[in-house]
Image (cartoon, rainbow, N blue to C red):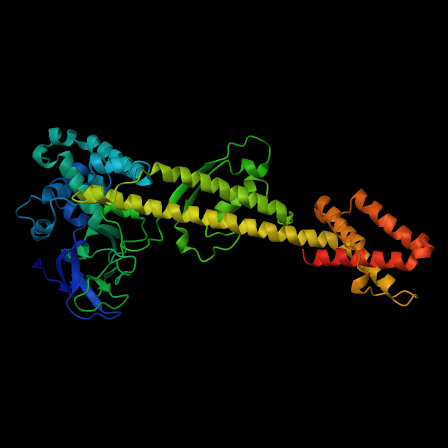
Amino acid sequence: MKVRIMLHLSSSFCVIDIEGFGRGAIAQEDLEVGDIALEIPVPVIISEDAMKGSDMYPVLQRIDGISVETMLLLWSMKERYNSSSKYKIYFDMLPREFNTGLSFGIDAIMVLDGTILLEEIIQAKEHLRTQYEELFPTLCDAHPDVFPPELFTWEHYLWACELWYSNSMKIQFADGELRICLIPIAGFLNHSLYPHISRYGKVDPVTNSLKFPMSRPCRVGEQCFLSYGNFSSSHLIIFYGFLPHGDNPYDVIPLDIDNGFDGDNNVMDSCKHTTHMLRGTWFSNNCNIFSYGLPSPLLDYLRNARNMSDTESPMQDKLEVEAQVLEDLYATFSSMMEGLSDTNPDTRENIEWDVKLALQYKDLQRRIMSSILRSCSSGLKMLEDEHERSHSRDHRENGCPFMAFHFTVLLKLTSSSNGGMEPCSEDIDEWGVHLGKAVYSAAIEDNHGGHPSDDFHSQLTRAYSDVLFDSNNIDRSKKRLVLLNKTYLDCWITM
C-alpha cells in the first residue's frame, strides 16, 4: 500500500509496506553516489520551535529541570489529536503502536531471562515511569485545560516516547544549533549495517533545506536504507523495535570481573573490578595462539591477574597461564550459556511479535557465546600442541651438551691411532645395543633428559674402564663403547 504525502518536498522514494520491515522507502529511480535522494524544507521539519509556539510552553518552562526532549514528548501527545495542526498529515501517517522493546509484554520479558536486554528494558521503563509520575497527574490537576487527563495517560506517554526514540534525528540548523527533530519521510527509511545514506544531519543554509545524499548506489525498486548510528542490537530493539539483518559489530556481551584480591600487589589492586565487552569471534582477524579471536585487553587483564606480565617468563609457564585463562573463560561462558534456556522451534509459530523478537535476540546471544566457547576450545588445543612442541624443543636443547660429549668420544675412538675403527654389522652384538638403549632410557627419565642419572654414570664408567684398563681386549671394548654411543646417538635423533 503506497502512502501519499502532500508536502512540498523532493523525494526519489515511495513509502510502502515491506514484509519483514514494516514501512520502508523504495527507490523510484536509479540513484548514484552523491545524488540527493531526499530534500526536506526546514518549515516542514518538526522541532522545538513548534512546541514553543503552543499553549503548554509557558507552563512547561516554569518546571525546574525539565528538558526540551521531555517538552517535545508532551507536546506531541496533544498535537497528535489536534485536528487543525499543520502537522496533521504527518501524525495521521504514524502507527497507533510502534512495537519497540518498551512495549514488550510479560511473555517476551520471560523469554529474555538471563540476557542483558532484559535488564536494559526494565531500567528504561522504570526511568520513563518515574519521569511520567513526576509530571502527572500534577500537571492535569493544575492545568486541566492545557493538559486534558484523557490525552496524558501513561499509554499515551509511552507512545510519544517510542515516537521520538524511533523517528527523531539530531539536526544542525543554519544558526549552528543542534536540535532534535521529526523529519517527514526520512523517518520511514529503515536502518542497515550497510546503508545507502550515511552522511546527513546539517541544514543547507543556501536552500534552507535538509538534504540526504547517497553514499552508495541504489537501483530502482530497491529499498533504500539509512544509518541510525552505531548501535547494538539490544539498543535497536528497545528504542526502534527491530533486530538488524546481518552481523552487527556493535553486538557485545559484557563480562564483569571482580577478582577479589586483597593483597599488596599493585597490579592486582589496580584491577580488582573491570568490565570487558566480547563480540562474536567471527569478527576477529587473528585467531592464532595467544589471541584466539578474543579481546586483547581481556586476555592481558587475566594474565596480569595471574602475575604473568613478565615477557621473559619461561614458555612452559606462559602456556600454563594461557590454559588457565582459557579454561576460566570457557567455564564462565558455559555457565552463561546454560542460563539461556533453549526454546523448541516448533513453539515459534503463531507467536506475538514481541516474543518472536525476544527469541531472535536470545538466539543471537547464544551464537556469540558459542563462538567464544569454540575459540576457547580451539585455543586450548593450540596450547596443548605448542606445549608438546615446546617440551620436545626443551628436551633436545637440554640434552644436546650431553649428547655432544658422547659424540666426541665416538669421533675420538673411530679416528684413533689403531686405525679408526668403524664397526661392521657383524660386530654389533646384543650387549652393545641393549646397553645403548638403557643409557638413552636412563637419560630421558631423569630431569626430562637434561642430566644423566647415577645409574647412567656407573654404566658409562664401567664401559670406559674396559677401554682404559682391559688391555687384553681393548679392541673389543672400544668397539662396544663405539656401539653404545652410536646407539645412544641414533635413539636421540629419532626422538
